[in-house]
Image (cartoon, rainbow, N blue to C red; front, top):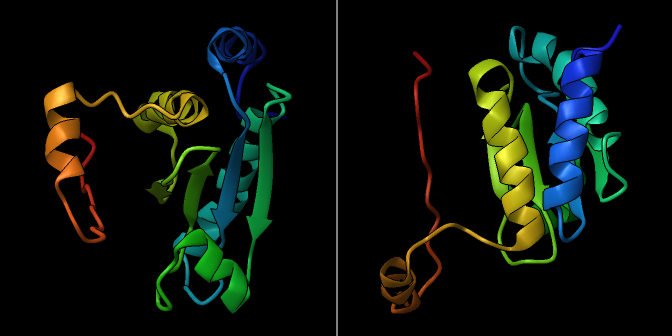
Amino acid sequence: MGLIGKDDAEQIRKELEGALQGDVKLTLVGPSALAPPARDLTPQIRQLLEEVAALSPKLAFEYLDLPTPEQREALGLAPDEAGPLTLLSGAARGRVRYLGAPAGHEFPNLVNGIIDVSRGESGLSPASREALARISRPVHIKVFFTPT
């Protein structure tokens, strides 16, 4: 049985069909070195991402349980960074990352993130873009939240 219901899958399929511009890869990095509960979540996250990827020919899914050093570097992962970690990547520079399960109240953010990555858009205002353009060195931004 799927995690995404038939009616929900059809609604998401229609939303993606009208919104996706470019291809997006959904990469799940497994928590191989971690103990439960992180390891216990990985099969459900994998199934969820596989179901989402099946909703559009512009989406591809990849699972890396034990990424090689080369794969880690290509994905921009720190040597000690572990999952479950979902990366959304497309033709545009940068990636969107989800640590943990992009499910429940976070699922719409996953779908919106996929759409944004496919368009190469961030939703930033022109003033924010100007301010960011003045940054002269690489910056790693982390956003933390607690669902309520």
